[in-house]
Length: 191
Image (cartoon, rainbow, N blue to C red; front, side, top):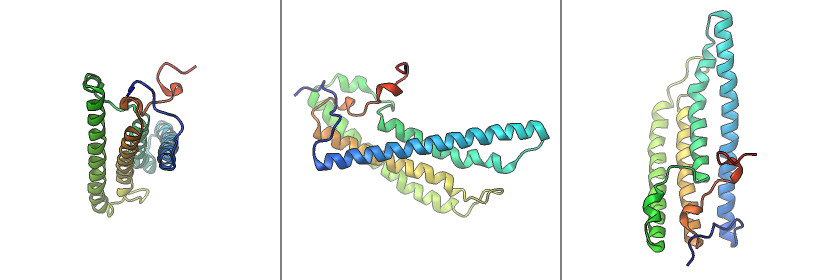
């Protein structure tokens, strides 16, 4: 069994195509949320600075936008990082294990990750209930809206762990090469 081969790009079976589609949908959704929240936050904070310097006053509803949108932006970022295998991973230990042991450790880690993220999602629902009655003073948006982004992020991380586990089970490649970022987004490789 050769573990140095990169993960295949094209899924072969029907279930593999579903897993591939799920990953693509997660990536697309995370990119859309990341771009939209970044643009809105940039415009809101820039406008707030201009208003403050121009009028010596603050626009209170603009100051609430970061509290509302930053958790969504952060969640989209950590989900996208997980999709591209860019999270911190202790490769040192796995690279010093035999191929079968490394694979078993990797798969056990993915199961533990999925269980942890789904548990965090479940407990996050309790936080949503508590914060649902609190509203932002100027916009009237419930405080739970901010936490919802993190809860959804945890669900997507759990799903990403399961799709990674499936890919590790179905592929005969090095499990550390299952999730890799395209060359154009890796630092230093942009032309």
